View 1 (cartoon, rainbow, N blue to C red):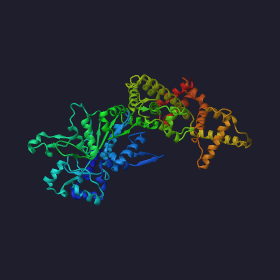
View 2: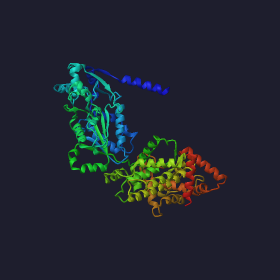
View 3: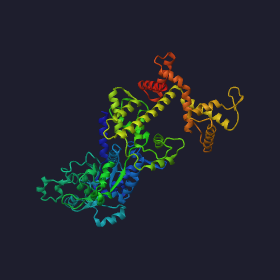
View 4: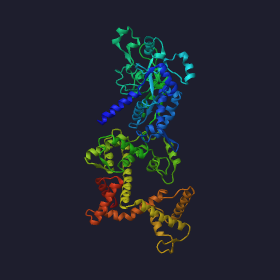
Amino acid sequence: MDILKKVEQYREEEEKLKWEGTFAEYLDIVKQKPWVAQSAHSRIYHMIKDKGIETENGAKTYSFFSSELYGLEEALERLVEEYFHPAAKRLDVRKRILLLMGPVSGGKSTLVAILKKGMEAYSRTERGAVYAIKGCPMHEDPLHLIPEHLRGDFHEEYGIRIEGNLSPLNMMRLQEEYNGRIEDVMVERIFFSEDKRVGVGTFSPSDPKSQDIADLTGSIDFSTIAEYGSESDPRAYRFDGELNKANRGLMEFQEMLKCDEKFLWHLLSLTQEGNFKAGRFALISADELIVAHTNETEYRSFISNKKNEALHSRIIVMPIPYNLKLSEEEKIYEKMIRESDVSDVHIAPHTLKVAAMFTILTRLKEPKRGDIDLVKKMRLYDGESVEGYNSADVDQLKKEYQDEGMSGIDPRYVINRISSTIIRKEVASINALDVLRSLKEGLDQHPSISNEQREKYLNFISVARKEYDNIAKKEVQKAFVYSYEESAKTLMDNYLDNVEAYCNKSKMRDPLTGEEINPDEKLMRSIEEQIGISENAKKAFREEILIRISAYARKGKRFDYHSHDRLREAIQKKLFADLKDIVKITTSTKTPDEQQLKKINEVVARLIDDYGYNSVSANDLLRYVGSLLNR
């Protein structure tokens, strides 16, 4: 009953949104709410903008896309600011076909789908309301009723420019149904819907030999010619092509570059002049965004063909590369799994992250700078703090290759391999090693990978495996130390007290006896040696730490465990080194004694309660780390 009540409630809300009135009454609405008369491009821009924009470090994130598209902030900002924004201001870019170009499964189709769904929802809001001449199959703009010679006066009074002419059908209806009285013409509020073919259209080319231009522009209804007497009577024409039905909104043109030329010229006429030719009528006005998508190979082939030169300048190409951020790639997999029928399978922590590492590494290009490897580059791109590098280094890396992200492994391949792992294992839990193994096996079956690429990708799987080894050891380390963060903080504070005394050539006070003692050189070296600080380099390292503490103090910040990457790494390694023998013996023994069994159960419980494992994945992790420590 609950769902039926919601259906009824939705129906009631739909009824409340409906509006019908004369053109004279519509003009009152236009005066109060001028945005109802905006162009299709303007409506799309404001739809995106109204959802909210967040700015961080100068980069914009549009809330409209953020729940569906991940890691494409720069491409989306370019799309909105270089196409939709100027198009909304009636600048010349609105007279161009928007062509999204990028690799397979990069998000192009998803982007268009988001725009379509967004427009359907936006047309049901006050700011996105759309009105049309009632009974018009093309949902024509009512302002087309204003005669050409009065449009200048209308602009002065309302501040709105009118573009486009009344369609042949509505011109006839105006005379026959309303005796030329435009003020009496009935207007209604419309709601965009792809299913109902209102303001949202999709055109997909089929066999060039059999495809009819009528699919785009409509066709003659031969059954009515006898009734109306002529093919040039608009009542004998079906205005049911995609260009007709997508008027006032958006039309997606799939596989545009594979299409016959006659179809392309209709699109170019529409975008450039705002009209298209249909049947035996004068040009028919239409206001809609034409968006197409293609891959780089098809686009290069298209522009190399001399016959297409006239089309080049009338197309705006927006590159949509693969995501290059590790954490965002992980979100893509989470979303795809959430929407599947395997969402109930337990995926051990870090599994998707490790799979994403492999994927991102395949998309990155080798840095030209010798001091940065691909793993560091991956971390920098993801916004991680890497010692010795800053945001300027990231900007420099991004400028090295303009086409970075246009190649590599696509997310669907990874999800296919994860799915294969789940189905093949027929268990309720999978981990990072399972997925890495499946990714490796899948490379042999991948249809578009050369032998050279395969070797390169196998190496990336090895790199991801090493990264996972480090993550796994740290995870177990944290689980063995009951309060890991507290232990790390205590050890670091102890180290810093000794470093300060060492650098200031002063004594420390024993907390128990109160007597003065020298800085604990053994403690300091046991930590510094974890990250390869030599005896000769120890003084410079300690002074660097002290300078960093002073810099933080000057800015009113507190130096803590996360303030220095190398020191944090050293503390982590020291904690683990102290625990290594205990962890090694406990995790690798086949016949644990009572005390060891108790410790294992405690650690498993902690991995389940605090870190998101289940009993299977927690025990798998302990066994794996035990094998690593025994190597």
